[in-house]
Image (tube, rainbow over the protein chains, first blue to last red):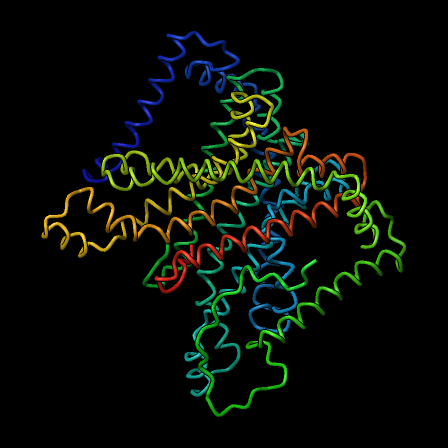
Length: 255
Length: 286
């Protein structure tokens, strides 16, 4: 317990120092509020936005888009990934395209999606879909390849059926890869979501940020930026613990 | 145009565990010879582009949604002729290279300092991780506010995209420096500077390359992000402009160029990484 507190102390202290410096800077230099408002103003603005319902509305909208956008590609990614891992022919043919798309930032496809789906929810969902699909697929395809062939041979030698092999050997070997894919898919999906919301003003927290920025309401913009940072950290922590949970059977848990 | 299939994800083939007596089938997709790989890659890509050409023509798809490949290629030729393409590539490319260099120069020494000094490590590393894992787009409004809408935004975005991965990897690598070597060096009277120069630095070099590769990949995203929101010239800007004018063929053409450039960059950084870590067994899987 005491150790945990001591471990956390330096970063927390650092944060306090940064906040204090920020406050002092605004007091001493008297920056215009548009450029750098004092931290207390940002907090005030957050409370105001909360009372106006902006924070909750934006959050609900973003969360809904993210959940709707992520579910389908995660399922499809697992299925296609397993197919790629199981069929070398399919993998050889599909891999160049998947890797080409994976190496390209997902957001580069947005101009095309604007043309296809217009400006609205469908573009958001489509961009989240494509951003999340690739890491999920490639991670699962890699996962199938990590199945120990010796285990497979032993299982077959001892008369295990296809179902048994899938459940007891392939699935456990696959779980850690699904965890990795999930983490990357969620974080890429989150980026895609914010990108569309900020660029196209479709609604949600990203749109709130840009709206405040365009109105030169810097305190409110910062309040939303910090909310997004907290949200991002929460998402990352969540997906990391899911990943760790899925790969708990392995001794060497990679973090 | 090079037609070899991209190999970004190819992992080193694991040693085969097949029984040695088994005869190799004619088309064994698990273990292809290099020639077979090229043949399949070319055929694969040719089929892809042929399909792309035929599908819109046969099913009469509106060019706004999916122009045939020849139209995309024609747009590529038009843009090359008018100089837009080369111009954008040069602008985006030079800003990118300069920013990556800047990120590298800033990140490596500060990472060495943070990794080498205990209290700095404990204070700052959590924040570097946070910046590394957070989507950079969150920070874009702040960058826009403080830098203004100009080329600086692109530089800052690439630097804050590329520097954290380099720093994270280098800081981690300092922790993995062989403790035995350090103890021996101390026992033989090595000073702090000696330790740093002769033991820490050489063992960090391959990780710097890994960090650079990750930085290049993330930096591309940062560059594109900044171009779409702020630039007046450059690949991202031309692409978003084409989509505003409903010129789908041009969007596709630019997307193709962007994909090829990204792949080339990623390949190049893999190559550098392999060269710099040749004394290690394999590049880290980060």
